[in-house]
Image (cartoon, rainbow, N blue to C red):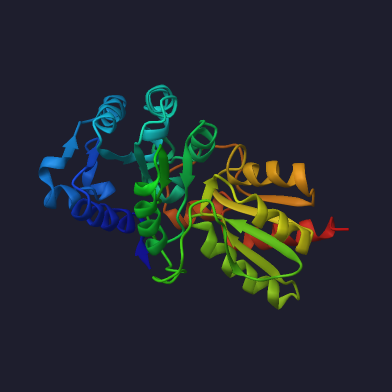
Length: 310
């Protein structure tokens, strides 16, 4: 079990050592986002703008025009909410080379409650032209995703939860932006997951196997650009698809998958995620259970979808 955002933080330090033009901006949450590790090593390239997310994005945009590669960090709700207009109009509209780290995404913020639980940022970020959206599933993937983001010329949004997650990928696994990772082959149903839900999907697959159901698991770490080929190929093979995300069902990763399949290879689908409601205070485990984001919910949805399979 490791913090996903630790992978982001370690990658930022590595990038800072390799590239003197990498700069980091934070909105008074450097200990939470772990950008304090970058600041400790590169204080002259680290900027705390205070609780002023809109200014942070505009400053980063200006730095990008001077040849820097700026990374902005705060909670996902503040990044995608308070600064959305600046991300849209300053960064995306002008294709500026700014990267965004949305920490504490999903229900994992726990006791901080609904106001701090970002459940909509995949939706509001993926709808922006020129934006790349990545949701890593573990520490290693977060580190690779952050390193890869630095190589992309243009805006990138990376989403991280607060809690530790199982390390399900190997350090030497290849990570390619826009290329989904099939982490388990199957023939009866495809389970597409991202972030914290990838580990839940693997657990669900074990339960389904005990019931004679063969599940294919896809880690869709890149929500945009989405890997159409992998999704269509898997849906063609299994004939049924379930998506799982720690996010609102509407507009999120599941919606992105359904957009692809409805236009190319329509199959029965089921969606696991937060269903049109805000969260509340509680432990992350309690909240994941209450809002239907556990392996048992994936199993139930898979069995339901299989009944609709021709």
